[in-house]
Image 1 (cartoon, one colour):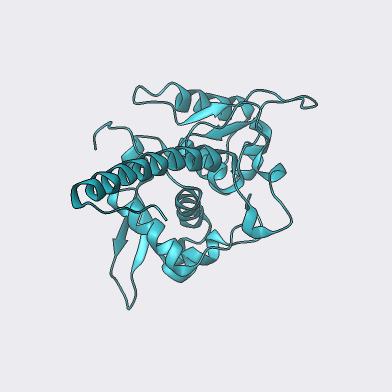
Image 2: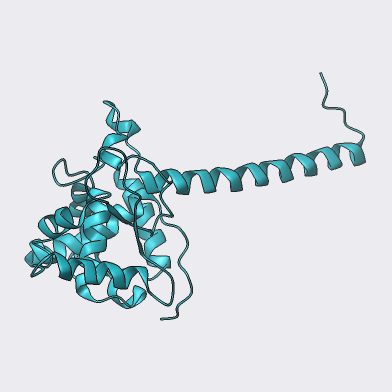
Length: 227
């Protein structure tokens, strides 16, 4: 694989990757996962922040996008397609670092202590310094950082860390768990906000170009669109 930077991933795409990494370790007998198992993992109510309610079609679309980036591979063994992650190879990252990335993809920003505890089933780090060491490696990657230490907010005793696969979290933004509303449909992660803003800017630019094209065609055709 090359070191070409990946495009920003969506919240659901990072959730799919996180689930695949997690289930590879926690339920190896059923890995690679079917689409149904992947949807269930993405919408899991425990060990997830934010909690999602993605449809089969939405998860399939996320899988297809990740396949186009070689982050997910499919196998056709059995009666249904199954999916596995290819994160270590694509990102040139060791399994310990991938375990940390997956934990952040599943649970949002976390302190080093939280990462060590929440990552235990994926990789048992000996101590906090081991976690810190792999986080530092993710920051110092020659191909570009994959994690960032967020600024400490008022009232917090420790800083939190977040992956960068969905973009750079906004400075001073609250962790994902504090951005949730009662309505599960409004759950949006910090990194996802940055990605959504970038997408909105692109859509706005494309809309302006379309409007300009329509106006030019109207002039050429002598069509007046004014009421």
